[in-house]
Image (cartoon, rainbow, N blue to C red; front, side, top):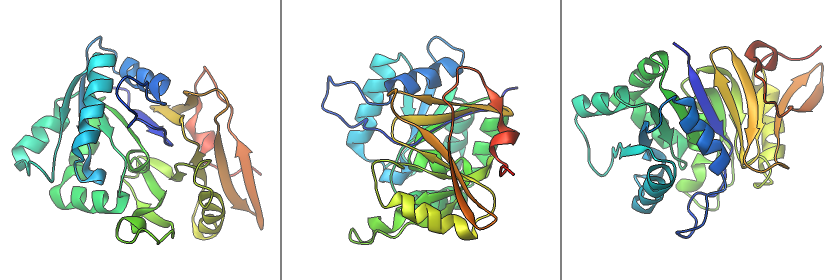
Length: 254
């Protein structure tokens, strides 16, 4: 069974009704990756505290526009039972995780055992996807702005541990939030391996042991960054129609 992840750096979905979300081309690929004409999609808005308007927009976008059968897992608003959580996560074709406070989301998921259920979903072939916090959660670690949710003036970016399905750190919003780039450079000094920096409207699509970079705007990019022999390396990743070995992406070049 193929393991499928689409991790999106960012892009505006919460646009006025009638306007097309910036990530449309990426979202179409998420739906296509399910292999079904009308896949079941589970939206998990934990990071936004189950924001109601966010849920409505996802319903409209993935439901009405992309013809998915959308349900939402509302851990704060509904407080579902463990049985209901398991049923929703293990009986869907696509899981899409929304943006917000990554640290708070990961802590709650671990408390509720959702981390273990996500792994079961991954191994049975469910498409795992999401934006911002929903991008970070699939990686070993992420460059996160979780502190700002407690204090809006706190611009400190921190490392947050994800589910570790991809052995790298990921950084969303690499182009639109200017403090991300210097913060990532400093963060990688004491972080093993490499980081994948995703601009808005850019995603890394992983199928089993291969990957490709996809975008919904042609001028957007993704980067591989790391420290090597005292030098900070920043490599633009090719945007490919063909998949490449993931192993090559996750190692430092000589």
